[in-house]
Image (cartoon, rainbow over all chains, first blue to last red; front, side, top):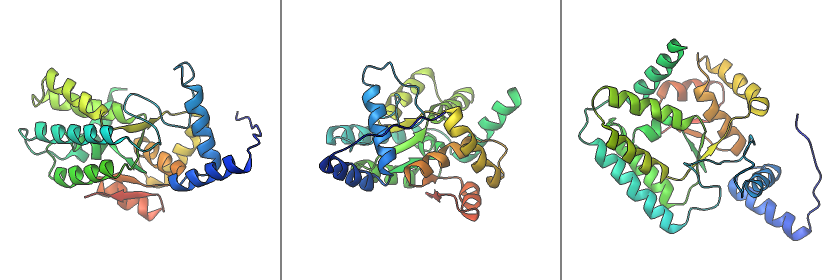
Length: 106
Length: 140
């Protein structure tokens, strides 16, 4: 069950939270939860939340650093280059088949 | 920010005929520092595609290792699934979509939470979602 707490913010922090939430197109309360989760997860021991990204494939909602962007673009290029030698396949069909096979095996 | 579904990410390493468009769009999102999001089911779906490609003799173990290394460089933020908070919401999305599985609904639920859309290559999903007002866009 969800539990609510009230957090009092000064006007400046409230304004920053609201502005950032607007930029990210999420509600201020959602962003506050994301930031709380990120803070609790710093030591890696508190990750049982439902909202807020985490995981090996992800960073977070902050803008990706330029160096990481270049690394990501290089990774994109390698992925596409590596696939060049294979036969053409319909990726939507592949995913559908794997979902169906998973269902049939259960 | 955008939510990318498994078809979009898998098209980067499967020779699908929409790959060029996916490559261009993903490159633009990354260069524009557009945050990329997905539910935590994404790696499992990609894993299934890689298994299929390996089974069919199109990839070896080294290829798979390299693909995972590169996919993790893309900076896709994964959202865990909480049965209590997310379970009923995902079920409520699945029903009007008339799907026999809930995988797509996880992506849509994350998009709804974040106030954005899911980008997919699945034309049927995009069509069904549009007909019931769910935020799914066809990439190519």
